[in-house]
Image (cartoon, rainbow, N blue to C red; front, side):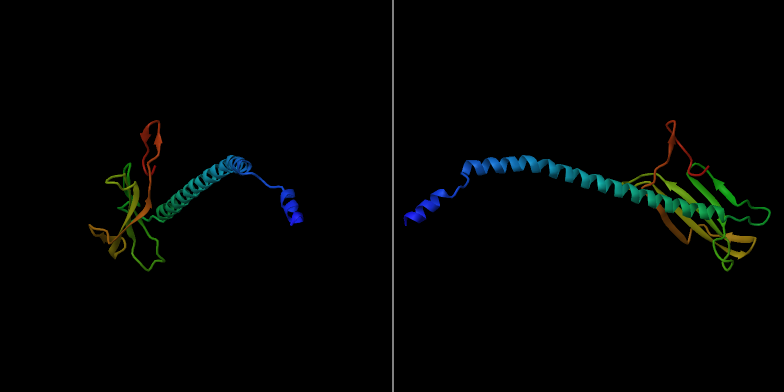
Length: 164
């Protein structure tokens, strides 16, 4: 029994105060690590959002460029670009393999309104009849948003046109 009591007294250990001080030091060391981790996660999400916006913008720009490069004349009387202003461009394009008639395309920048972000909308009016005497309806049979979250570029405080 004496040997057991001596053995228990010889065991070294920590007091409650020493344990509390050690835990406090551990918290002081680990808290900044968690703060850095939180900031790194936030920055990573911001970068991912920015890359997504750049990719969506690039895809919309590529699509609009391809359409504008595919513009055609409607005979000698109609120019390939029939209308254009700071927010809208209307043009005739043939994006098919020749099996479909020429279509009239309208690209319009819609500014933010009603809680919706700025958008670029495409309206496609299919041509009816024989080339070059095609007729186009008043309402587009196909309309879609090419880009959401679009903003007009400003230069010197002045908004620049959609297409120059």
